[in-house]
Length: 68
Image (cartoon, rainbow, N blue to C red):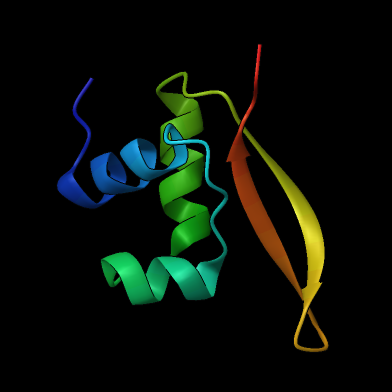
């Protein structure tokens, strides 16, 4: 398994217990395609869940680690 640095930053951030939206990912990590990075992380076995939230009148995905 090879995780690129952007995916590693996102994974590490999520494992702190925080959630992440696309705008936060762009601001924090310069990530324009968060859903693609999340897809890859899930493929590596990282337990991530998503839910749709309303943010500033728009519906966006919010990603968190699944607590077991």
